Image 1 (cartoon, helix red, strand yellow):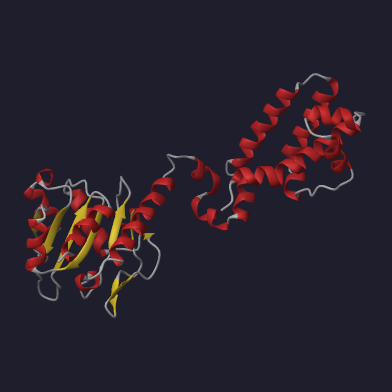
Image 2 (spheres, rainbow, N blue to C red):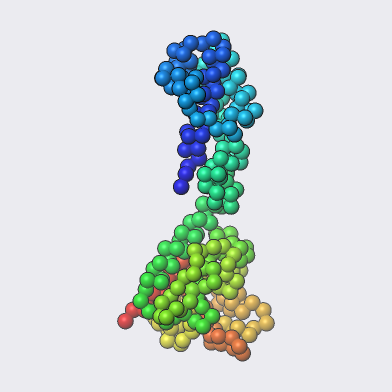
Length: 304
């Protein structure tokens, strides 16, 4: 993990300071005067002057950096610009270069995975959605650990496999729902998660969650387990409301059943289930405000 501030310190600052030191020396300032102007030691100025400091070509060749160096050097050399103003001018350029520009590109070189998230801008903007989507994935990881470490969960996995999903606050389609790629399967009595949670990988359970939300539910997570009348009864006994739906209904059966029941009357974590149909495996869905709440409900089924 590398912060963009590290890129500024390690890549931009040494090059910028060396360019500025060189420009000030060209304007007749002594090594001592350059050190005073830049607020650094004379030994540092000496290193810059003798080329002992590595300079990043991308920074060195950027016209905006070169223009600022010349402008600041002129101002400091003549006394027309204070050190504070020089700092402000440099900070303004740094902020500009961080926002999808030179420093953002250098940051992506150091962390190539940032390219998948529009780099610096989305990382530093709390409203960009990246932070929220990563929080959803983190929530799923924690809940999946609890689920797969629970003794006996593998016995609740239906033939089609299970999936635990959680959606973004304003989810509109399956791309806004994160889940387990390939689903959770029972492998020799152990619940196995094949890959890290991703968005847009669940069609089935994600669609169930979206249907519930279209009906007016505030649920943001869902998990499917096998159907058994005792499973539904145990969940109801634990205080979770249950709604049955007809999988053969011509329209959206979950949305219709929940709308008819009134989602506002349901417990925060609730159950939707169907007892099967022609070629349709009976399934129980547990829905709730987040993945952790859903897993808590399902883990309650595993208690002796």
